[in-house]
Image (cartoon, rainbow, N blue to C red; front, side, top):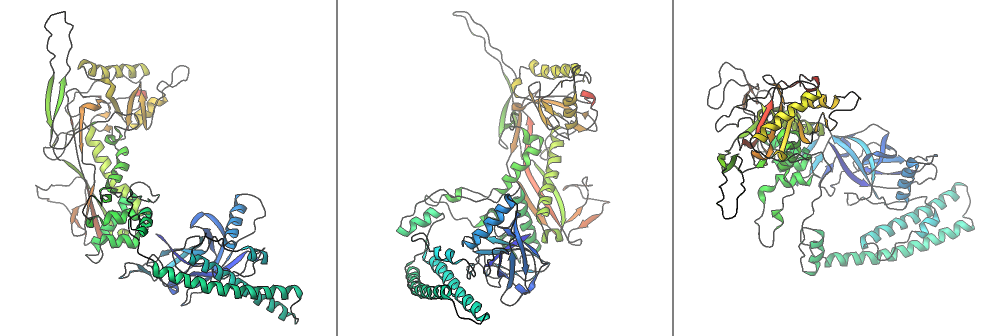
Length: 637
């Protein structure tokens, strides 16, 4: 993980050709994040890149760091002069002009903590004792309270004379900093004038004398004005009152004693979906591993101090009561498990229903009886004054109980402790793969029968397959007619039909050509699409050892789905696991003749992810399928 630390930008030499600057890259003082970097514990390899705002795509120069001292690490940076017009010259020139104009006032190191080089302080901040510095960046908003331009030397005199603060546009503290910088620059210019004249054994000439005297007068004027500004700043601090509220608007209005309540605004990091959930899981794992020394929230503060959603997610246990005044707590910006599911769902067969033009399944609650229509009704023509026949419907009652799918993954303690962004993705993808495979196979495998109070039957279980006609385009159209005819026979609505087939079968369809070389089924492909206007879900799991390539047609509205919309994750380092996807026993049968692996003995941690989900056909004839389909010559998945 790459961290950042901010410090003083001390610009000393603005040579028009060399374009160099010197300053302090890092100091051992506590910054606004509450962290401390021990300068003497830093390693680096010169030269380092000079970046803009920690963006590796925006290099603007090179940096040479000096040896560390008790006061910190100094640097000398150089921005090149680019002779050719283009985006590179524009970027470097803009960075240089921003430094000269005082728009960029801070620098920040990008570094990574080395093994054993991070300590958690009582304040909650981190102390970095061993780091590797990777880059130095120019930044506009430093976290260090002292990060400002203190010295500007050898700047053009016309530029200094024009650099007068605009009244009403700066705070008192900013004016103090600005005038201090100008005073320092004037004093440096006076020193340069005297040094140049002394080196040649002469006195100041007329122009130099006029510039020296003018600088001396300006310094005297700056000193008087700075004294006034310091008094004003002290007065403002004494009169300041604490702000209240949870937003900028509420804080501003609190100055008048009136709190304006607005909806909270949450800032999110631009991270791949599901990564924040994986981060929260790993924080829980590391906290569990510490045996009570660290809480998950403390781990998150150490690892991801800038990830507000993970921090909020892990501190949700201490949520204040909801009142008519405090309603913001009803809005949870950190539904990381639901976000993980939102990322997971499109990668499963079940999750593709209700997206991309595919009809959705019928969502039903757990443990509630649902009436499903098993036959269609008929209407009748009636004459004037005649009795109207009754329409007969047949219904069945179905209840979806609680069932859950679980996945257990094992990772080493080293991976959990020294995680990187790639490890976070590994955990996320591992949880995904385990859940996707189990759900997809059991949703459509004809051999999957119901296990009472454990797992549902597949939607094809107990259904007699239809025999496919063959592999040609005409055979495929005939097969589609046979599949649809089964729904027409039972008076079902074919507007909610969906086809499920293997990815390779969908690809074979897309490759079929007629005698003119035109595609027979252009709207279907490897990832799905439509076939003769019917939505297609393509999955690698629509191929089984017993049924071969399957093409499944189903009425989406006649399939009930109960899903609590969350994933729970627990960890253990004391468990002993049978390292097999086909264990010899279950919770009711003792495991025998197997070798168990101790998590404690192997320095491993077991992660168990569980998701409550269930499904069931609500009507007879809701699903029909063909097996051993070879459309377009496809024979395997």
